Every structure is written in C-alpha cells, then in structure tokens.
Amino acid sequence: MKRSSHLAALRDRLLAERARLRQLLGGVEAELSSLAGPRPAERAENAQQEGSVAVLTDLDEREWRALDEIEDALARIGAGTYGVCEACGWAIPLARLSASPATRFCLACQAERERSQRKERRPR
Ligand SMILES: [Zn+2]
Image (cartoon, rainbow, N blue to C red; front, side, top):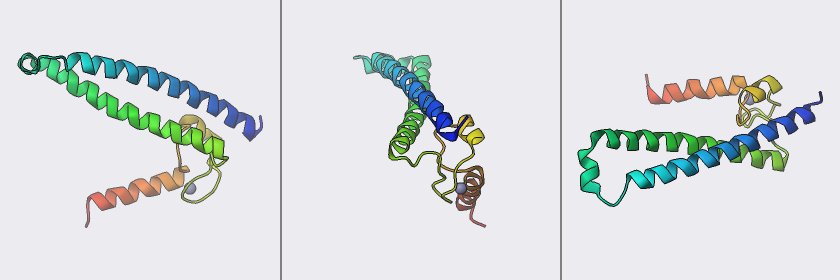
C-alpha cells in the first residue's frame, strides 16, 4: 500500500476516535452537571459522590487533551503536514503513526523531549 493510502486509513481512525471522544465527553458533561445538582450541602455529605466527581473531572481533562491532539492531527492532515515530525522534519514511520495516529514527533524526538522534560523537572 502507498503511504497516502495508509494516511487515508489513519485519517478515518482519527475521525472515528474524535466522534467517540465527543460522544464520551458529552456524556461526562451531562453526568457532571447532574452530580453537581442544585443542593451542594447534601452533596458535600456524600463522600462517595464527591469521589466520583473527581474521577469524572480527571477523566474529562484527559479525554479533552486527547480530543485536542486529534483535532490538531486532523488539521495537519488538511494542511498536508501530517506524519512529519515537528522537531526534525522527517517523515514519521507508518508503524509509529499507526500505533498513535495523533503523534507529532518521531520516536527519537519524542524520547529526546521526554529526556529533557525529566531534566527540567529535576535540575541537577
Ligand atoms: Zn523527529
């Protein structure tokens, strides 16, 4: 298969994943607003429910980030820059794209970024 056909397949996967996340996030938002109901005093007494609000909020943030990355990837497909590492400018191998379609970096640059982020977090 040509690279362009692979990219078309990846685009379909990104579109499907975006639809799934949008639906999921729609459900989470609805559940959050029902949990956050009109009686906060009663809600505070219920620790278990407070816990589930935290879990939902946490899930929410992660899923929103994933959705953002997918939107970015789809925009890059539109712009014709998808599948190119943003750090070194080389084509990202299809195997890597197929494992994580929304990635912006090749494996080497991703590893490099994670190394330097660790360094920033723990200076000397
Ligand atoms: Zn790279």
